[in-house]
Image 1 (cartoon, rainbow, N blue to C red):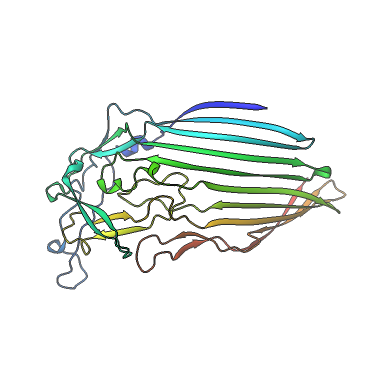
Image 2 (cartoon, rainbow, N blue to C red; image 1 turned 30 degrees about the vertical axis):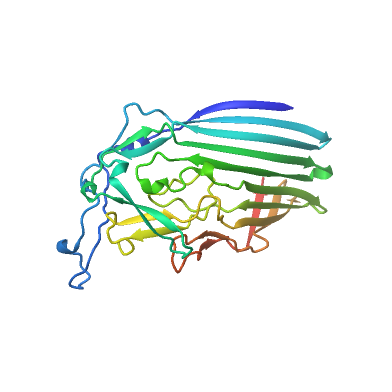
Amino acid sequence: AIKFAVGRYMQQEATGFADKYNPLVQGSDIVTWSDLNQDDIAEDNELGAANNATLGVRRNINPDPGLEGPYQILYNLGVQHELFPGVSVSANSYRREYHHMVFTTNLDVPLHVYTRIDIPDPRGNGATVPVYNLDRTYQGRVNQLDTTSPNNKRTYNGYDVLVNGRGHGGATLSGGINIGHTVSILCDVEDPNALRFCDQTRYNIPWSTTIKVNGSYPLPYGIRLSGVFQSADGFGASAPANTPPANPDNHDVNTTYQVSRSIVPALTQTQVNVLLDPPGSAWMPRVTQLDFSVAKTIRTRRSMVLTPQVDIFNAMNANTVLTQVTTFGTSLGNPATILTGRLVRFQMRAQF
């Protein structure tokens, strides 16, 4: 069988759209503090200039009157064939395109009021990284507009192959492999510090690979053994402030250099985050997990069916790092969370 489908999916908006522009919102500001009298109490004369002149009032952000609804177009082409009785194979290709992407611009702070400053790469490799410093006369101005970007794009391409089999006595086995990647162009930005690596088409982003196999096999005496094996590229952390947003299937480590006034004394902003590595250059570790389950069916004289079951999650007791410190410094690369260790669960199901 051959199948082809094209679908257009509008971005769903519930209360989030109204909440974003609700005048009843919370606000915050980040300012420098110099504890002149060493009493650990922040006093007015010890605080630096405000970075948000609208603190205490509604955030000055509004939707463009001509804002168009974001949508996605999904293309799918697939082939399915029965190799022989009980065994079938299918192959599919997918393409997802993102259109009418929304970005936020600050009408009162155009990009040309930033000055580029090149600073040494903190890793000491002889390279430099750019930091854009805001003109101090524009500090604290906020007049944001959510509008449709004519240039920002995102595209996902993926392929998968699946095999399904059913044997005698109720044995089943299925598995497949998926490869894919997402590439974005997000160069319409509010802050020029987000221009670094904003066009991912210029970089060699590897294709992520996911493998999954699961099956079950009936044993004598009403016992059934089942298992699941899966292996996938680890997911990266979300993108820090003033950097390009991460892709939905982001696998990058995203090593970030936090630039403050201790590094650039003339810096107007309190802090600027700079990505050190281009997309696709450093990925999170691959996550591989094997799970088992053993169950037995017991039929009683009163037509009751009891099914005791033992589940073993992460049977190989893998300790793969799931998240790690990505801020450049002495703790860079330290694990933050790891895969949950081997877990054994006992359960009983009763059917009347």
